[in-house]
Image 1 (cartoon, helix red, strand yellow):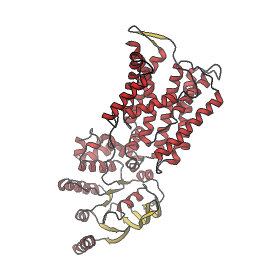
Image 2 (cartoon, each protein chain N blue to C red):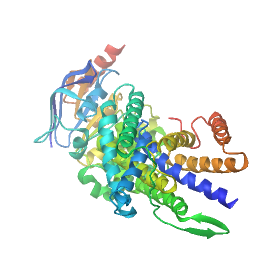
Image 3 (tube, each protein chain N blue to C red):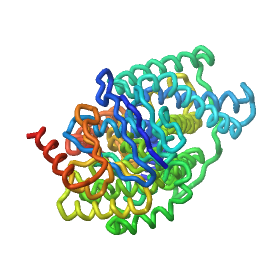
Length: 287
Length: 237
């Protein structure tokens, strides 16, 4: 039982990190960023480039810092290139799906061209194993389990107690009213994209420490994160986080007791049942 | 500080709704706009506050030229628009929404003092402070919206139909609160269907029809009052 719960918690934490970025952008801008998976991959590769002894060799700590800084900038650039030209125009949701899918494919292939398709190994941020109640846990797994709640808890605090955080929620809930209290909606969009991209990058670094790096590594987490956001309820960050852990746990238990090949089936059956009963997701609210 | 709108033209997309409206309020003055629905009163307010583009004309507050000011700049300068039937921020608490009212410029550093003021004017908001905005009644919502406007330290407060759809006793309560706000020296621009209220509150009224000012009432003598009512209801009936 122990290892299953640990595995569920690790996946849940990673899904929560990836999906939170997606959810934040959906909440504030009302668009889905399908380049989020490519951003995740980018974060992992930037960390690898700075950290790995076969590249710059500056160590994993420097790699993480570089990745965070780079991702904040990348998020803003992505916003201006792929999202901003369509915001406020009719059909923005659909246009942005197209532009971000295209952007994601472009980024993925750009990295494939630069780095090649061979697997790369990113150093784990922490190395070693700890035994808790008879269950062996890798430090990297433990880090994921602790980091996600810490980061997302911090994010939740910012959203409720920080001036800019309050403004992000204001823009998400009523853009016109937000403008009328003097919030520059454009500035909030930029901040939101930067934060979302940093979350993607951090998820990439964590994933990179657990698995290997390939340019297509973002595709599966993106799909999972998309499911999590819909499942948790569009526009609810709490719903997204709860949804991530529920999905992680379902996967872990189903992989063990039912089998890995049936897990997607189990997952989708649960999702379909829940969305039938609650079409707005676990914590979504009809608007 | 005198507020002046000169020959303002605005609309949505290709459709022009406001065709050159000029209005003005002296410092601490109270003006009212009335007229049939769908004739551009709200659009005028949205153009003044910068929610939609102004095509031509001028907006001045004292010596400041705000003709091309963004919505954020308008709020910073104290021109604050409380929109019609505002749901404010449905999933935020009343306290959070009021705090956000003080988002812009110098208002932020004074938010605690402003909050005390708002809760004195609207004691019901103090009772509801930890409730979500979406759970408020219509009257309370309006109070929260006006309260958020006051949190921004307004020099000119623009109220769009503050008493729309409210029960008479709440309407009276709001009218009193608006009167109290006016007495603090804030200039007021009020749009409302309740002409009786506007007559009590305002020194000058503008009738807006078809996106134009078709009548300006500067003194409130009874004769003109009758004339306005006749004209207003005469054209509607």
